[in-house]
Image (tube, rainbow, N blue to C red; front, side):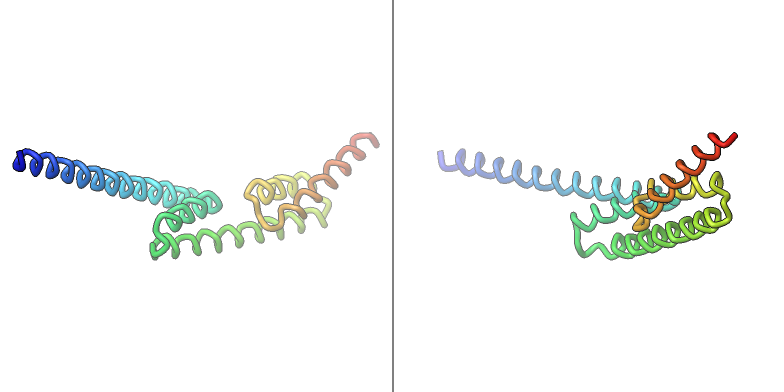
Length: 137
C-alpha cells in the first residue's frame, strides 16, 4: 500500500513538472514569436507597432536587454520620422502646396505621433482651403 501511494505521488509530481515545463516552453515560444513580429515591423519601418511588441516583451521579462535596446531604437526612429514628416508637411503648407502636404500630415496622424494634434488641425485647414478654392471656380 505504501509503495502504491509513493508511486501515485511520484506520478503527480511528474505531471506537475511536465506542466511547468509545458508552460515554460509555451512562454519561450510566445516570446520568440513576439520578438519575430517586432523585428519584422522594424524591417518594415513600422516603428510604432514594433515598439508595442518590444514593450510586451519587457512586460514578460523586464531584464530583456535586447527588447529594451530595440524599443529605444524604435521610439527614436518613430520620433525622427514624425518630426521629418511634419517639417516637410509644414514646408509644403507654407508654400501653399496643400495636396503635397496632406499625405504627410495624414502619416503623422496615422502613426500616432506626438504632433498628431497639429497635423489634424492642418488637415482641417487644408480641407477648408481646398473646399473654398473649389467654390471659387
